[in-house]
Length: 244
Image 1 (cartoon, helix red, strand yellow):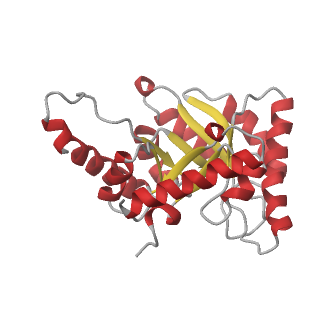
Image 2: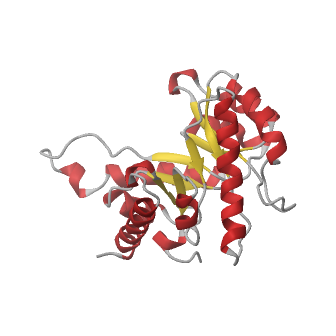
């Protein structure tokens, strides 16, 4: 078993156990493999292990990796076998990092999801630059639940207004909320951050916004996030190992 296969197996088992403990269907939690700073070859190995969704923090790195992954998949030995299904595996790319205004065009044209939307100006640019033939860009609003000045994300008190604005834009589909919590040794403090995001989504749903996604939880804290309702977890190190 390869290191990446072992990592995926371990993370999937953690997700299943956490969901079971929370009385949830493990299939209700999607795994996003965070591939930033890892080579395209690692992504291809993960695809071979039935992982389909990957997260990137930087637009240029992500774009180059998409092209490299596509080339490697087309060159794989299975593609040379005429008996093998001709279609390439579906790879879904999520942008999960801070969004620079001068990178919105790349993101709008090449990514399937944007999980880190936190400004109206950026939302407008993504909507304007999303090619209609690609269908709506799936988006989550990033919320800074910890209040750290170093973290991206809209303040919880301002999230509802931004959500209502984004929901009205063409070529974007608002799916939910995302957060990166402050690391906390105190389990209760960590749960409070995730609970804040869950309750915010519940408040928005009560207003009529159909939000089906809570993206929260990473390698160190995915169990807590799932207990608080995460529908997506973003995991890098536990799958691919430490970054160089």
